[in-house]
Image 1 (cartoon, protein in one colour):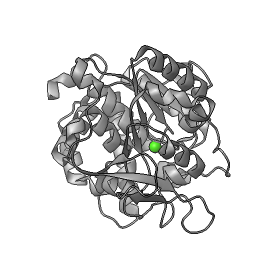
Image 2: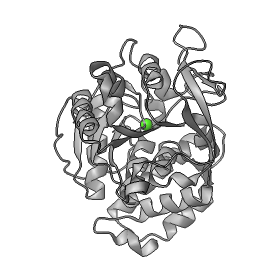
Image 3: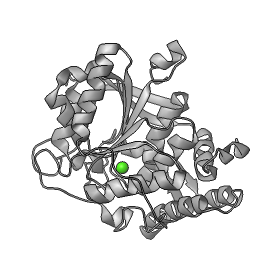
Image 4: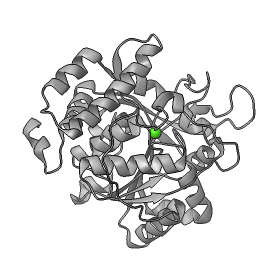
Length: 334
Ligand SMILES: [Ca+2]
């Protein structure tokens, strides 16, 4: 099976890309992976989630500073559409980056109305036909707000790739729900109901695609020392410790970086299914659960649900992202 190829393959020109992120440890790794592998976002929007909105935004600006990349960052929603806010500091540390060392200066934000920015950019894209791909690796609040304000923006979206939900109903934040959907179920329901060419990267394949700690150490041993390497290593160390502390062994799981890898290299996906998706909104043990329906009876537009990807390619893309340094030195490790 393959993820549907977008216009870029037909025209030889890649769609522009907007990344929406909640600024956690694996968000940072995903952003570095995009930059190091030739698909840096053209703009970034931020959202509450792993940490509060201001911290998430600072974290994104920090990653860009470490990577030596100037990309416009637009601050977005600070809370869910309807429910109370929840965070995941126990996963990402108080600062959201697992205590990774920070550069002395970071850039200013380009704006503080992410939903308005999405409406504006995607409306232009819908008019001109120059569609924009989206990668969402946090709660879907900004996109839901944009869709609510201007439903026609679906015509400006090339492909939406999102990390969120579950394919087999095994969640992380609750037994049934994955964090990004649980953090704003109403927003996720709006996005899954919209007529968008969507690739969903659910929780289960994210945790089943992992490198051993020993493999990660081997990769880092091949990278010369630099502030960039120290930063990447701190992210990886935090992610590994979190899993190890819960008795699940010394592994580096690919969560948001798996979604980023699917954007960089769609052919990395080796198994997926097409299904309609809806989100359980009732309070109780299933709130925030994604219901996956290959039969289509839910009636929402079918999306591609990723189940399996090539781990060797994931490792290669990740390797480039830890060896990358400003000035393209990463090319040495192609
Ligand atoms: Ca995230």
